[in-house]
Picture 1: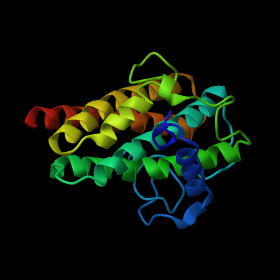
Picture 2: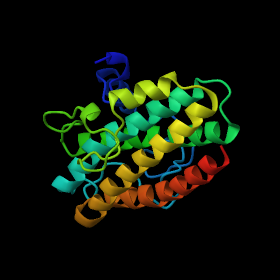
Picture 3: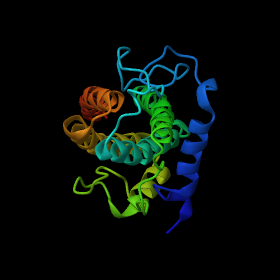
Length: 219
């Protein structure tokens, strides 16, 4: 397997954890479901509770831990896919804007969830890790909607309108997987900040799925 395109590559996860380790210095937006300095996230409303560790926020259960551990690499792949699109030429402006929005929303959420896991004294990755390339774009696994190595190679190689269509199709499946994970957290989670983020992800990504379907119809 080409290490460049591992959808849960060591480099991608390391970059996500490094971002989280940089702490509150990153970003300049209004506090939004993350650390005080994190940029405002498209995946969470301004009323989402802060991710700052407090005695109440430290209360969590296994569902909260799994939600954060699984959503971090899931978000990391969405950021990677968005970066691929932003590096391409001749992409419709609406699709580029969507990729920028997804990256701006999910990168600070990676930071926030990593901070939660550390404050809970939990590992930042699920035990045993997950080879996301085996999940494909199906929804049957715990980390649904993940792109395979082959999926990522196709996206990287595609250009112009073909790339835009592929990105929208893949990201729709990716969002559907995130929504399933978030709904599980809504029903089983205990930590109020984690549950609030899950609800925000469902709301935001359902809207983005409709936006992507509308964009696909114009290409």
